[in-house]
Amino acid sequence: MKMLLKAFVALFVVAVLALPDVAYACEMCFGAGSDEATVQAIFMSMLALFGMVTFVWGGIGMFFVNMRRRARMLEPGDFVVTPYGDLRPSPHDEPER
Image (cartoon, rainbow, N blue to C red):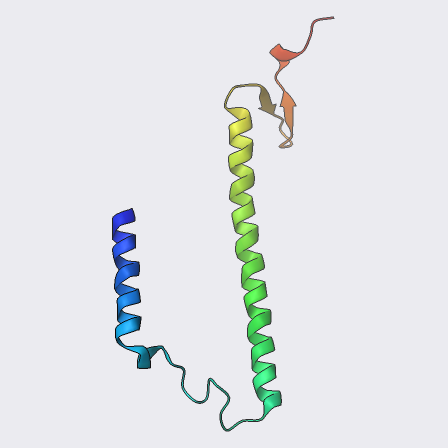
C-alpha cells in the first residue's frame, strides 16, 4: 500500500512539473479585474471555512485518539468501566482492609 501511495505522489509531482500551465490559477483567482476589498473578503471567508473544517476534523481525530488511549488502559485489566462510562481501578487491585 505504501508503494502505491509513493507511486501516486511521484506521478502527481511529475505531472505538475511536466504541465505547469495546469497548476496556474485563472485571472479571477488572482483577483484580476476586481477590487482589493473583494479579494480580501474572499480570502478571509476561505480562511474561516478552512478553520471550521480543521476544527471538525481535529475533533474527530481527538475522539479516536481518546478511544485508543482508553482501550490501552483497559487492555491489562487494571481498570473497569462503570455504567456511567468512568474508569475505576479493578476490584482485585484494591488492598484488603
